[in-house]
Image (cartoon, rainbow, N blue to C red; front, side, top):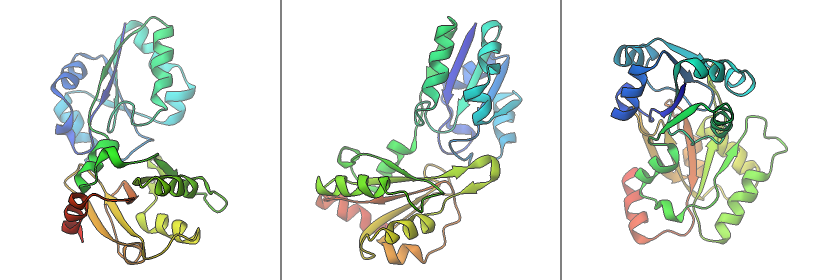
Length: 242
């Protein structure tokens, strides 16, 4: 029948679009993906607004099992994703599988970390390739290589930090900086710590890597930006976050 894949934004239950909310209310079954980001409000608030019971969907259910697709053949199903639908490329797979089964797919977009970081004042046009720092990073060098390539081009680097929501485990900016310094990036390099962007818990802090490393950030999920060559307007805007 139908599979609605709906981005619900980064903040709370009110961030869903009117189009997305209308589809959710019409749905027979509603899943909430819970492995690529962190919900910044209690799930009960979503259920109260939507008028639906939400089924938590882990990676195994979404990527390896057929439950969501099978239900969509006979019923109207909504699959909710924190941020935007395609903020994580893993969700392209479920769209392809649904279309192969001739299931109608509705896509409803929303804000993701990839555009919300514009609130730092750094131009989205000046970001280079994004990269992720995994928890097991002892012998991992690819994030540093991405940073170095971006730096040569004068571009900003966004480091996305690993997370395991089902284990309530989220990498902190502090851990990310430890990894970066361990790979011989100058501790005096200026960086931007971003925590729970798009929510009412949001924290943005600009400073040297060595200074940010010593601060405590309690809001999640977190990410880190090391700016490249900055326009004077970007520099002036970032001063607000010192």
